[in-house]
Image (cartoon, rainbow, N blue to C red; front, side):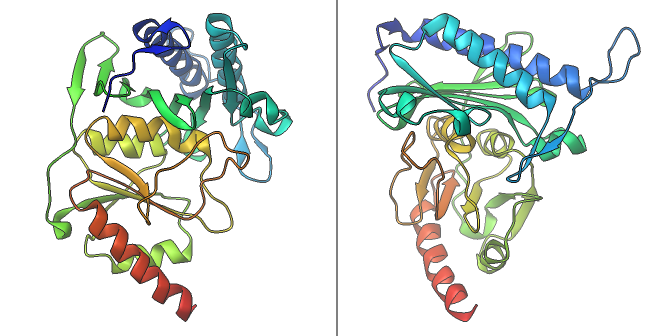
Length: 300
């Protein structure tokens, strides 16, 4: 896979450095809402939780989204780049992003329910897509103190708060029975529960944010994640950044039929079955999942 050479005339290294800086800044904002003030002994900031039908939204989501967008706009403008974020897409005219080849795809707080419950399993997702595919990604897991980043063809790295950087590769576990699956604690429909119960890999671990799930895979703590849409489906901002983090670490992300995900389409939902894995048994598991689902759907 060819390395990314430049981004709309900007050096890749400069764009990545800015995205990483914004990622760390976003993490600080989220933690100001998550933790009590360390000096004054004050309570954490008021989350002002609101239910918007498809999930809760907090003041932390809004503040972090505002910070990320403002900084991306200041650095890159709106002439060459479009913007798609969870907090603003409903109010946005789709043509504002669909007309652009380069589009920033942002989830300022992936795992809002976990953030509210204070499980620690929440993340910031910042991805840059080109012609519908992610080419640069930053995923920050604030409670781990880690920022994961990747650019197309150049690998995946993790950076800690002391600026130490390490390159990451997925585990090479290749016995399907030994593979560990990361699952959601709050987004498991009955079809997914049945599917997971019938796959050969039964070592399961519940983790909140998709970003934290993929972090577990690239840190060799797990091997698989399955997304199966039901009444709703994951959106572009849930998957774009985590996908590149995983694939640049040697993993794979496809639909069960083997096709790649496309981002910044008219419909921002990613419908159907999606497998993210360490790659070793990817095709086999996709085939098994399709076969099992055909039976599950027929019997339901």
